[in-house]
Amino acid sequence: MDNQRLTIQQIQKKLIDKKLSAEELFKETLDKIKEKEHKIRAFISLTEEEVLTKGRALDRKLQKGASLGNLEGALYSVKDNIMVKNLKCTCASEMLKNFIAPYDGESVAEVNNAGGISLGKTNMDEFAMGSTTEHSAFKVTRNPRDYRRLAGGSSGGSAAAVAAGFGQFSLGTDTGGSIRQPAALSGVLGIKPTYGLVSRMGLVSFAPSMDQIGILANNAWDMARVLETIQGPASSKDYTLVRRKPVAYHRRLESIVEDQESKKEKLLKGITIGIPGEFFEIPLEKDVEKALNQGMERLKDHGAILISLSIPHFHYSLSAYHVLTMVEAVSNLARFDGVAYGNRASKYESIIDVVEKSRGQGFGDEVKRRLILGNYILSKEKVSLARAKRVQELLKRDFQKAFQQADLLFTPTTHVTAFKPGKRSNSPVDMQLLDQLTVPASLAGLPAVSVPCGNPENLPVGGQLIGNYFDEPVLLRGALGIETLSETMDPEQIKVR
Amino acid sequence: MERLKIDEIKKLSRQSGLRLKDKEAVKLQEDLEELSCYLSKLEDIAVPETYEAIEEGYWMHKNKTPLRKDRVEDFDQKERLRRNAPKRNQNYVTVPKVMD
Image (spheres, chains in turn orange, yellow):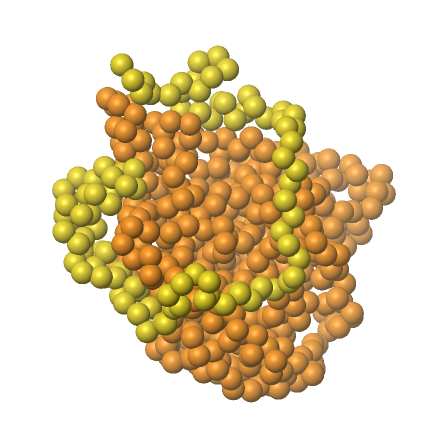
């Protein structure tokens, strides 16, 4: 098996047993990046030289017999709206193209403390507004499964990097599905933890009442290990909602499956999985439907009990999501004015002029569209805002009723498979429909994970599991269960066109 | 949502701190009309007329968000932050002239 496809635990074992050196492993990854990055365009900035230096340092540490940190031996990337000290943090925007992060975001600091080594910053839709990475000011990220298609978004660079084997995991952000949707289209796992479980410190806000840092990885084991590392309470004591004891997610999984290599039969015994009918009323592409049906059958084979249930306010969620996030974006992006923050226009006559010109030149079309619609709602449609808040509340109650009957919910992550550039970006509504299956969990602040559950026609299909608040251990168990469905998802077996 | 006139779009763009060219305003007019379906969808949802009548929201825990103490703390990143300002003069961020 390709070394880049090993779990972090397997890598650490090889390093300790001297079957592999960290320098050798990291060089393999860098060579892969050199070979494929020009086609995929996952990164905005790369830190190649540091990686090899740190690899040699890790080898020296291993020679001395020192024990390894939770993430030592793992390479990772970071979405370009999370701060990594001394690296550019552009949010894929002209507005911040020269902004150098003065400090590490809390989750980045936690990963670094655990021994993770950063490869660089990944491409995204500008300020995380979009679902394809076509709204990046710098480049469009392609899908490693098929270079003619897109990787999804907004964490498209992160999803593509993980799918291509550029490191073991990536930190992304999810406001309405920006981790889960690209994970589904690119054939990797993507988790949005419970809102407030992971610190948002060092994340450039889009809509902070829903913004959440999460993880994209190739398997549930690595996801559990990284979540264990970045969960709150944060050392800065801000940005995490909850004061609670850390959970050993990886160990919890190990207690269920003692041997990672063993068959995971009856892994989901005793777990009830609800199938919310409304999520399946959306017209699904045939391939998606086929993969999900197979997925449900296999979940049953793994011991889960499947029941039908209802989320009655599902069909209002996309409307409510867009109203709430656009209004929040108006406030959060107001700081980028070319005066204290952001690029300043070169020619101007007054302070009003400098603000309007700097923002006009600095923001792309999608950001402008959302800011103007947000201002429209704030000035003329305040009743829509109240209704959107009401929908959010009703959805939370729908989900709580559902979780009285089921431990997890299973839905599609997207209604389509990966598509070609321009197919949806020409219509803002078409593009925003890509989020319709992921926003309900975001509005309710619930944890959700997208897991590859099949690949008819060689294009990945993601199934979404939604859990109750702080039920990540059950969610990861479900993810591990579905992962066993996807033997054919080994990237090496998927033909790259 | 009714189709917004170009003048209204331009007014909204000024409120958003943006200056749009005519061509951009026309494109936005079309996009916003398409997006208005989001607002109309919400019309089925009844909302109380007064703020007091809004029920208390469900939240995942009963803890209150802790507030930081309001105190001055030494911060060693001042220079790094200043370096990111669009224009600067020694220890100051240079802003455009407000008054003649």
